[in-house]
Length: 337
Length: 120
Image (tube, rainbow over all chains, first blue to last red; front, side, top):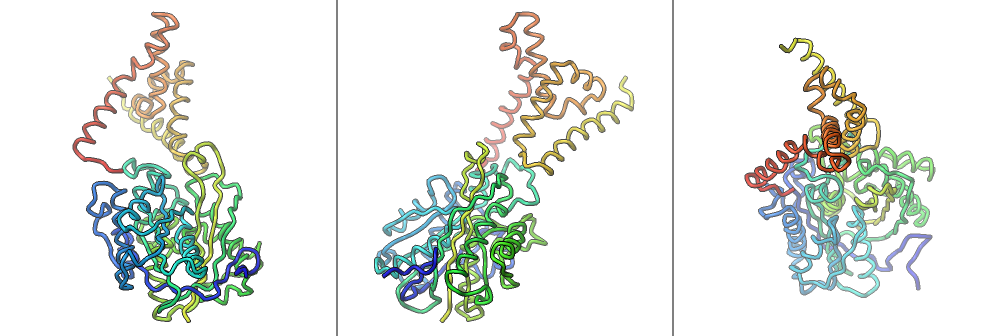
């Protein structure tokens, strides 16, 4: 029997449990409004490593081990490690998997990787293939800015629409049963292209994908936006957030309401921290969800949360060749029962 | 003797070139890379037409400091060497006037890397 409901949504027959999460961040994120929800805040963006790539790997490994420790589990007990990041050949994930020594499946959904990992973990667990799945995602400002834009030391002037890549990593441990919030629905997004070409305005490139995934999620499940205490998109930033609100009205005919927020806007104090349009990167949704939202769910301050992580599926080469920036968004419904 | 007006013209012309670059960055989707290469090529074209040297006479450092001056210097080097040695001079003369700037960039880049160990 298929577990598919509607066109793009999957409903686990026995909702898998997120038994533990961990989030670590760089110092700049630590100074933001959600800094106190991080399990560890590094005092230096190099995290004591020789390179920024080394620092990102240290952060992901730390997030994974912290997540396992909190649940009282060790790496050999975990069946599958699902992870992705923004670097070429997703080296952060691969090198972290080497250290963890857990059977590893690398994933890439750009900044939507956190939700992609969580969605796949839920499916693997509910499908009966795995008893314990660890899902992680990371990004680092200095590695991602170099990968997608310019090396940070070049000191290029940033546009108002530009976003600030979040430094940090988040991990979640998914099991068939246990204490914690459960994953009730997974909506897998379609790649959407509205012709945006500007790599300095990724929020606008991803907003249509976010809006369409939300519209489809609500159509498939029969729930409306009011069903959730909190709907969060991954990293649309200020401009993308406004655009998603408008698109939800024009394309879906509903108001997302004041419960709709964006991880990229939550992580920084946009008044005091000079991040322009907000945060971006895999870590934006990962550390907000696995740091802040998870803890709020455990305290029952949130009961129903819809995570809609968004990703821009371009490469620097495709942008330089004048290609559009297609976007994607995956939605995961997390509920405290 | 340099007259006071030269300072004023340098300020105005140099400022205008930079302001143009800023306007392009703010109001188009072009990047800093486009502005850099665009201004270099524009300086080269104006240099080839003999306009840029007049601008330098008029505004001094206001015209020599922006990257457009680099394009002009590339073209001026090529033209003067071509006049002396024929068409092959275009190739040999291209870096004649600009070699100082290019070498300085390499040397100072090297020294900075040695001292600061950049990671970005």
